[in-house]
Image (cartoon, rainbow, N blue to C red; front, side, top):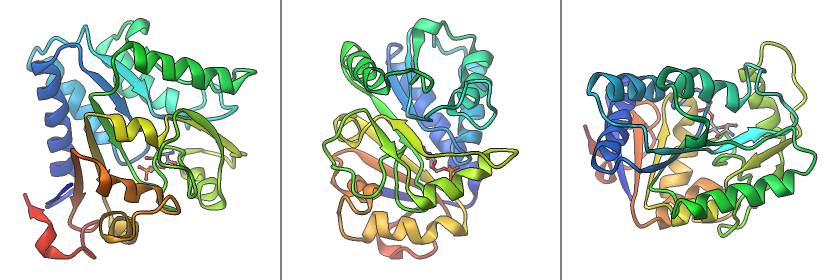
Amino acid sequence: MRTICFPDYRHLSDFAADEIAIAIKNKPDLTLCMASGHTPALAAELLVKKLREEKIDYSRFTFFGLDEWVGLPPSNEGSCHYFFQQKIFTPLALKPSQYFLFNSLANDPESECVKMDKAIASKAGIDIMIVGIGMNGHIGFNEPGTPFTILSHMATLDEVTRSVGQKYFKQETSLNKGITIGLGHLMNARKVILMANGNKKAEVIKNAVEGLVTPSFPASIIQQHRNAVVLLDEEAASLLDNDLVTKF
Ligand code: GLP
């Protein structure tokens, strides 16, 4: 695992977008799994800009949405679906066959999980998985206590996730369950990029990067991945041991 610290959010987002754009250029049928949320928002915009401006062929790459709030329609502005539609699918005019998202309105969420696992297998796995970190150390909706080997699954959201998650919604929204690509997929991904910015993420990043590797703190799994990079701004990196951090 490498940890890189950037002067600010813009630099770290630009670096992340570059990593993905270059990877698609080198492998046009790349498979990308991406989180939504505030952290990757700018990277998503910059990625779209780079792919278009640099005329990179993105007609063959495949996108997997990391997670979704169960029970929210795609039209809800706080849904992950809405985020991806606005930031990536519409601007790039992706064909629906190019992206796989959980249908969080499905009567049978378990079959959604099976479908996602089959889709990932049918594309020979995930090349790049770009994720954020929650205030309880979750990745996607892999909540504290989730086994490291788990594949796609539905999770009961913990108290921290339910309350922090309100930031995505204009009005108080009932958030009880999430559906997510699992940590087993993260361990199998050929590359993992974990991004975090801001002072509020400093402590969870310290736990993830320097703390005990344990399912009680899911993001600590990053330490065990064979090809992982943690991209931080100075605030999120502020509690880390400087000797272990590369300055950009
Ligand atoms: C959310 C999502 C994650 C996201 C994380 C951090 O609840 N389930 O996929 O990465 O929490 O979100 P943010 O980037 O908005 O801080």
